Every structure is written in structure tokens, then in C-alpha cells.
Image 1 (cartoon, rainbow, N blue to C red):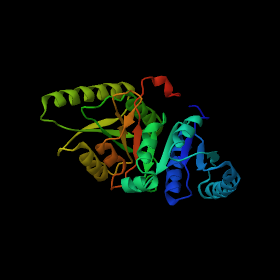
Image 2: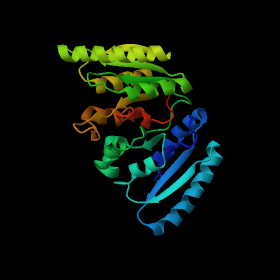
Image 3: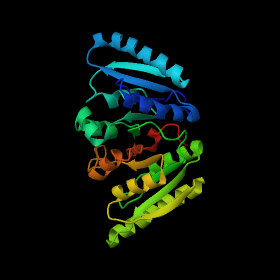
Image 4: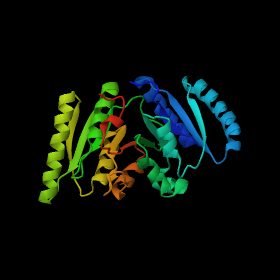
Amino acid sequence: MEKNRPIVIPWDFSELAEYAFQHAEKIARIVNLDIVLLHIVKKVSDIEGAVSKLEEVVARLEKTYGIKPKISVKEGSIFTDINRIIDEENAFFAIMGTHGIKGMQKFTGSWALKVIVGSEAPFFVVQDAPKNKTIEKIVFPVDFNFADKEKLIWADFIYKYFKSKFYLCYIDSTDLLFKKKIAANMMIAKKFLTEKGVEYDIIQLDGKNISDEAIKFADELKADLIMITTTKNISFHDYVLGASEQKLIANEKKIPVMTINPRKDLTKLKGFN
């Protein structure tokens, strides 16, 4: 594990930011990663004041949680620069707090969604404090669009540290082509996880919408995390969030969601072998 690749938290001095820190803290202890609080100011003259304010936050967090985060204050815009700075920090992943989809839209409009998909680093999106001290149960939706080797690599990574159990869930399709694709994608996932020794179950969900049913299942399971990948558009480097992904990320049950952006080159996921 590369110690210098931190967990980055976009920090706005809100309760949600502290929820994000609580999630980061439990991961950082087990995976042995640094935590960086990232705050963006509009002009250079604001940096000194923000640093002073953040130092007070750091002292409180260290006293409360026993772990001292680093700080990073940069000039820029949360609308356009947050992903660039996260990548400059060489973040392993980012954790961001939000009040569901309405809160995300209120925070940055459509930019909030672009923040999630615009960075090379995966995002954990959280709406509440963590319910457990570890990550025991992870819901892993599989559908006909499943093309995320990186998602499986992250599953292997999380299992190595947390011994989590993965629940590969799907909805059977009446469309023969979709049915065939779902079966093929499930076979790929099963083969990979079996070879890695990752514990998993396969769950067929009822209903027609994988997002709705995955959220319902995750809530009944009391899952600690839902793992998804973002949608890849025509251009390889152009990613969007579809309605189903938005619904999962901003789910009303406030279950944390890890979003992973598919990449051509797995070497970008430094630290994985």
C-alpha cells in the first residue's frame, strides 16, 4: 500500500463533511492511509484565513477521533477545480458528504454529479455517519452494462482489508439479449471473485428496476456499502451518470455508495497488483 496516496475529503465545515471524515477514519485505520481535508477558496488572499480555520478543525478531530488529518487549501472553484486538485493530491479515493440528489443539486447543480465522475479517483458518497466500525456487507449490482474490471479489482482490495462479503444482485430480463449479457457478466464476476478467494452470494431480485431493488435489498440486508460504476459515453473519457446511478448514489436509505469510473489503463490504479 502506498502510504502517500491519501483519502481526500472535500471539506466545507459542514456536518456532512464530518460524516465523511468518520467514514474515512474507519478506513484509514485499517488500510493505513493518510486523510487530507481539501478546502477550495475563491482567491489567494483567502488561503491564510482558511488554513487557520482548518487547523482548529484538525485539532478538534484529532482530539475526538485520535487521528490527525492533513490539510490542503487551494485557490479555485468547487465547480471546476475540485477533481483536478484531488488528482493532484494523488488521492487513493475521495469521500464526499451529500444530502441526497436534491442536496447535491443545491450544492453545485449538475456539477456535483460531474465531480463524482470527473476524477480518476473513485468516490465514496455518504449521507450519514457510519453505522458500523467496519465494512461487512457490500451490495454489488450486476446488469447488462456490466463492464467494470476496476470494480472487481476494488472488491478484491476491500476484501483483503475488511473481509467483506459481497452480494452480487441482478434482475432477470425477459429480453433474450440482455439476459445473455447479464449471465455473461455474472460469470466474469464469479470467476474473478472465486479466483481471489472473495466471499460472495448471488441474489436474484424481483421487480424491474435494478436500482430500486438494489436499494431495497441493501436496506433489508443492512449493507455497509453499494458499489457501482459510472456510465461510459461514446467518447471514452466522457462519463455521465444515468438516472439509475443518480438514484443509487442519492438513495433515501442513506446507504454509502462507492462510484468507480471505468478506465482503459488499470495502471492508473496505482497500488494494485
